[in-house]
Amino acid sequence: MKMGVMSILDRRLYHLATMRFLFVGVLVAIVVVFQCFALPSWRLHSLLDSEKFSVALPAKDMGNGVDLDYELESNVDGNLSIGETLDSSYGGENSEDAIQKGFTHERPNYAHDPVEYRYNASPLGVPSKGITFLDEDLGTLITARKSSNGSGMQRGEMKAQNEKSPLLKVPLSNLSTSLTRMNSLLLQSFNSSYMRPRWSSRPDRELLSAKLEIENGRVVSNPSGLYAPIFRDVAKFSRSYALMERRLKVYVYREGDKPIFHQPRTRGLYASEGWFMKLMEGNKRFVVKDPRRAHLFYLPFSSQKLRVTLAEQKLNGKQMEQYLERYVHLIAGRYRFWNRTGGADHFLVACHDWASQITRQPMKNCIRSLCNSNIAKGFQIGKDTTLPVTYIHSMMDPLRGFTGKSPSERSILAFFAGSMHGYLRPVLLKHWENKESDMKIFGPMGRDIEGKKLYMEYMNSSKYCICARGYEVHTPRIVEAIFSECVPVIISDNYVPPFFEVLNWEAFSVTVSERDIPNLREILVSIPEEKYLALHLGVKKVQQHFLWHRIPVKYDLFHMILHAIWNNRLSQIRPR
Image (cartoon, rainbow, N blue to C red; front, side, top):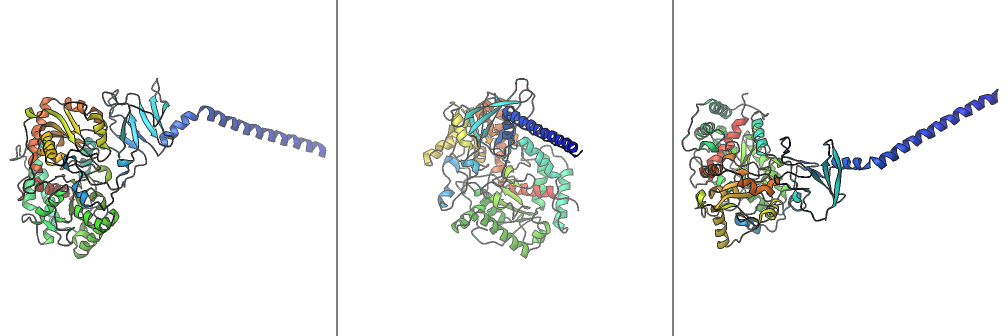
């Protein structure tokens, strides 16, 4: 009996062991089959999910009209290192840098070690054979193509990275934002949340009254001294400007030591902040001595002087930020106004490349008027406003050298000259230097008298002036083009142009995406003559809004900057 029971148990144990062996064997077989046949697809999808590469989509899917004018980039660092100063006019090296050679700049990663994407350029600027990805780990290019039946992605071609290829090389920047998207962000900002003051004040009630009067005021069809097509809403701008002249009161803080505070520099690449400081501190119409009457509070420091002064002390960008933070603590301790709004009714005007970075935390709630208005690096449409870069060569004669020729006298289609700062300009020259007789695209010109004269002659004789970004998104060429009555062609993704809140830039400029550089001439030639003449007229009419005057005049640059700040403050005001 015992032997029978043991025999049965032995057989059951044998069957269990056999089943386990078969189960393990089946699992091993499945794994082997997957590795043999499914690896290519798995590897491709692994690459697509990797954080080490980017996808560049074509500008437009011509088949179905879907707008794909954007760039998807994984692992984007929102806090890129602060860039070098912009090059000066005439394509030479920046004279400010010559003074500050002891200071070490950190260039953005994309400025010297770019991640690249490549695509086959077709006549319309659309990749002709699919999307190309760069896998840095493998050192190869993987071209993802649509399958013949359109159902999915096929195994891509593999090319060695050092293999010669006709494909265009362009570095990746942050997610590109089009003008259409910027317009949408501007509208959203009007309805966004705002920082409610800790207590109400008479100036706040005055601002709310002004805001309602602007929105509900009488419509004026043709305001005197203004050209309607260059404005988004000329009647609204006219009412807002008139109320600013009558009601705005600004308090200028006396605190702060020279040369960083209260010592404007009115020449050179960063002259905009200096001219504004000089004219604001000397203004008797807007400035009040009693801060209780003020609608806005001005922080009168020079970002350029801050950089030079602290660089001599071997201080870096973070320490410059801490310097401004200590200043905020100083005025917050002496006055109650900063703490009432968290700085929302305070403003600064700064043109140095670094200003956007070093003010982002200590003055994050302030209205910042910045030259470096990069929407991908913290510039907030609707709160911040763009300061034009005005390269001033002579304080007595800001327009020296500019002579506006008529359209019929402009024989050159497009002109650019400048140093090879940043990633974009080398691409521009690669495609258009010495390629077409009517495209005058050069590197740096001489800084002697002859070189400067030639530069100005090219600007004055061209229909379109190329305003390509340098290390940062802004460039003095936009204002130079306006002064010479040459239509600006802005090639700088994520750049918010000056006075974007009130000006209609499409009426006097052309914006070209960075990835459309290969099609630049085709884009310009396709503009009808009638449209070009309208753009040229718009440039002539907008010129008055970009001019400095030693004694400010109506609608000039000083008043436009102040109005932009006034306008953005009004947009923040809500009934309690």
